[in-house]
Length: 306
Image (cartoon, rainbow, N blue to C red; front, side, top):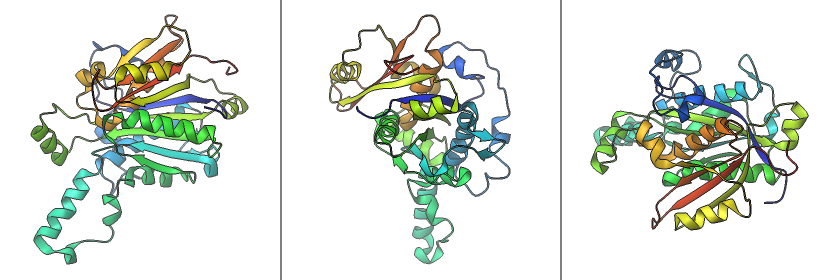
């Protein structure tokens, strides 16, 4: 892909308290130790009248922006006009939609509140993140199944490469609400993931200008109907050995991650790069003969990128 390289400069989490630090994402046996009261952090000013997925996402976005050095207290210090928000969530506002459907069934449309209607939009989460920090760049939500998180990172990388944005806040979020739990029971999908993960993606030029260190480079991405083909295309000609970030490792620990999975994988990968001589990680979603598969390659460094 031509255009400036896209690098990850910040990572933020709103995950179960058993994950106390982002580096624990690679420690599947991490001891249970919450660094904060997560539920208390989802209440208070700025969290009122928002669905759970949005509240989880706002907390993760704040952490990621702080990690990237783009917050002064609660004020965004980056280029607001050129900062995008890309969210991946398949079930994020299911509770809001179900609530509206229930009201229509009982009272017809005359019972609906116009104040609640925006919550039924699939773009509600991305909208709240943009409003919270005054971000006026492209605003996109991806709702296309298990590959959505990796797809969201691809779109962030594309926006940077096309010079549509200098910075992109990428969030993967899924809530464990009653409607979600009921749906997953019907699908026999196992326990629900309840959290959000955010990464800050920006052009390597912009990161250098700010004087911040890149955690990793988004170097390759591919979708295919076959996982092997997706991996081959994402790796391209890069000869480096990779550490595999397979989906099963994360779903076993966190439950049915759905649209948040790819962002979770890449957040973990970004914290792993440069440690224990790991120079490349590969996030994969899909099966050998599945109908959807995706792969994303993250490098500790790439040619021309510090």
